[in-house]
Amino acid sequence: MGQVFISYSRRDLETVNHLVERMQRAGINIWIDRKEIKVGKLWRTQIVQAIDTCDAFVLMLSSSAAASENVRKEIDLAQDSGRTIFILNLDQVKIPADMRYQLAGLQFIDVKALGVESAIHQLIETLKAELKIAIEPTVRRAELVIQGVDPAAFDSEKQQQLLEFIARLVQTSPSQLQLAGVAMGSVHLFIDMPAQAAFELKALALNRDRRFKQFGIRALKLAGDKKYINTALGVLTATATIGFLQYLWMNVPALFPSIFGATAGKVILIAAAMAAVTAVGITLRPDVPISQQVTLISVPFSETSQSPDYTIAAETPQLTGSNDPRVQAFNRKLNEIVKQQVELKRQEFLQTNASPEFGSDLKLTYALVSQIANIWSLKLNIEFYSAGAAHPGYESLTVNYDLGQGRELALGDLFLPNSNYLDVIAKYSIAELKKQHGEFFFEDSAQPSPDVYADWNITADGLMITFDPGLVTAYAAGTQTVLVPYSALQGLIDPQGPLGRVSQ
Image (cartoon, rainbow, N blue to C red; front, side, top):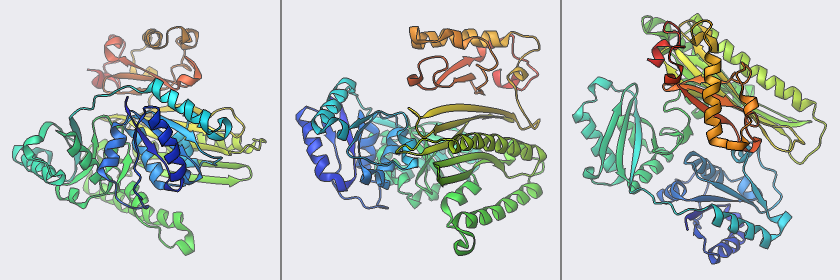
């Protein structure tokens, strides 16, 4: 049977030991770290490896666990590496908003409601039904992202120097490391290495090891991970690099807290930095294509209320590095979209009369799906819970923006006039959804309609269509996506339009 990682607060050790003993007697293979880890202490390679390779991740949730920064980091790693998460709720706990987002949509087994014996029995039976023996690869591929070097100068000699540098970091013979590929832009290198060495490298990145700076390594991730680790900050990020201003927000202490408050102090510093970066962009890079002048950053927003009880956290994508009117138009558009979504949910929360144990909350994040030439394709992910509702809600909102033309794209802009592109997209999507969901697919809800196919993203391989939960299949199945390859749209794409070059 596969291995189960136990995440818990050390304050619950006595209770957890009893539960773990019951699980082991039932034949469950347990990995548990009983060493004391204080906040701020370094990640150990054994923990990183155990989370990345476990077949199930069990969270022993309690008030102490909910307050534990180490537990939150373990959940982040488990989600990033695609582990299946199970939750055993040890006591009545008001889950903090940020952890609530981490655990949204997961099933809880409640000890207080079921009793200890029934709850642990249910967990054991669930694990036995779900666990499969996984054969872990002996070799792992690591992707390293290097900035500050000329890609043309990154020749075979430089590559060999990098392999020797990594070998010294993870105390492995250079002969056991193999360069599998190099991609340019920022330099992305893909290195195959023994699994143990790969986990050691990942732990060093999480611990912000300063030696990475010697080779300009800004980020890395292992094959199968969803996010990169920023080596300067030791945090997971959706993109390989973060903008200068985002780095300031995450890493620089607030200025003048006694006068303006901590957040205002950061804003003052970042506003000054934005002015400086923009000025440099104007004076030094007038002939560089617009999309190469700018960096996508996140501008955070948060709001809390006690009466009614709600929390709002939102990230607004913004471009920095140029004051070109097209960049300003992009920033205004994205700011308006996020502001509108926040206001809609705020008004909904304000009208809530229920007095449940948990308040309302909204988390709005985004992902850059692709950036191809001047086409920027983003997806906004909206997670929310209205007090008194039976379950949280999930919505998506997509934005496809042609920065060269300074305008948002409509789906029809991609295709020849009067073509039946929507029928073709719907036909392909219906066929794929039928394969995935069979009798549980709601075919009538996937018919060719602009409202049904309103959420789409441009990718290098095709159009990615997103369907919100409950639209084309059962709500519990979550968000659904279909990638319509460009080969299925041949003869419909406008060769002179924004998609012409991408699809060739």
